Length: 107
Image (cartoon, rainbow, N blue to C red; front, side, top):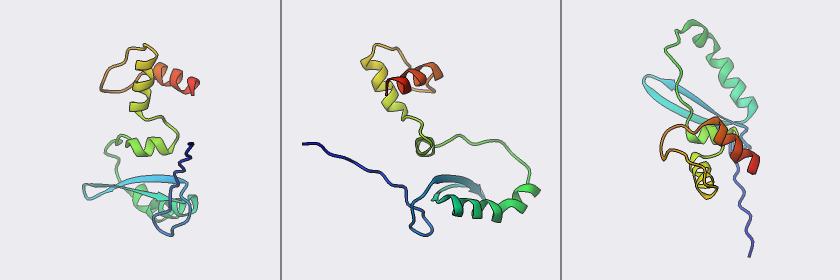
């Protein structure tokens, strides 16, 4: 029996279909919210004057979910594929772009 699994991102504000996940931090806490393009733009416009007046303190890493939302493969999937294809990769840490490219080409 075949199954088809469909994953939909839902806008956390209005329940419509989400297009992106927006990550932000405030008062030491990190947040992420799934939004449609319109709501994401509205959030950015609302924060614009604060962002322009603020100082950058560095860049945070992307979460696995945010990366996945942008089409990046899950590291576990790449490692499993690499093991099946006799490609040596570390069990932890960042995957080389070469291995990820090979994975994407195979899928």
